[in-house]
Image 1 (cartoon, rainbow over the protein chains, first blue to last red):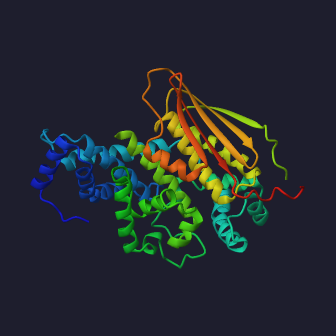
Image 2 (cartoon, rainbow over the protein chains, first blue to last red):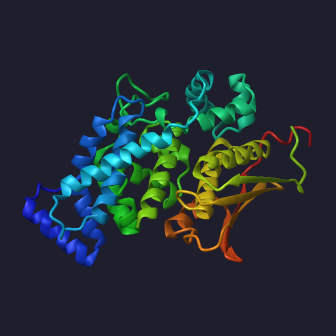
Image 3 (cartoon, rainbow over the protein chains, first blue to last red):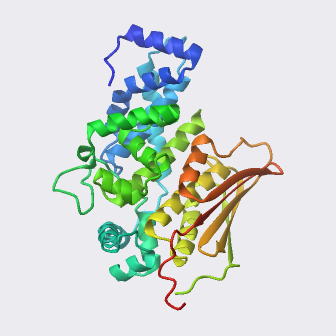
Length: 251
Length: 136
């Protein structure tokens, strides 16, 4: 985290960014205002969407605001960004409005599936097939695949919720399971690889992305390494990629 | 359970909007499950289908249709997405990151432009097809 900057310093940075469009400066300006994004995201909490997702949506709004802000205009960045971020959050809820909620039965199947995937992987020493999972769960293959798809639904994916899985200990959350040292190292690796686009992701998501797409680890291997369930890795990857596409589209 | 014949092809035509990508995924996972893909491989396949579809339709969709062909091959699956859009839309395709992602997820992939329409395909093989050799 960077030191808080004065209003004048920030304005100078925005003016420089307007001239240079420097990626490093862009990252810096985004990072300097993540608190605002989180603050606004919290105002939309308790509406059925996990807070962590809302913070990511707000972060997308923040990136857009940084890109579009014109320091020549007599308006503070925080005012401008608040409009953009709130707009992004509202759009998120509107877009989600049509989404079919997974039936309770599928949700339950999905939650059980995480455990069964972990158990069977352990037992077999490899990733199980859908046939094997269906047999173990006494469900049809279609139900297993539907449950997999249902798991993609946002409402299951909150980093602040207890991580489902065999390694879950009471109130431990994913956030608390990830070591700060790991994150710092991963952040360095990422900067080397693809900094501008990945800067919009939280460090833990960057790390998972790096391990999967640059180090070639499987989802199960990443899950083991980070001490979380494979299902959680799967959701985080899908969500991160979706966010990256949204950010890339804005550039 | 038996493998599908090598020549099987499934075709899916969808409105080119992000809300329909789910159907492209479900079709792919249904086929992959029958081909004996492992859970990890199916997870990768889902992400790859997402990448492919978004490379064709762009992040927020296009007016038009995306046509997906799923070719069932021995021990693997080939998926091709082709856009049918009005000319003059925004350019789409895979960025550097998209290529990197597909390289990690599938065995082969390619993007090309045919008559001004985006075409993206990939091939993914099951590392070790299982649950399919009972009747062999």
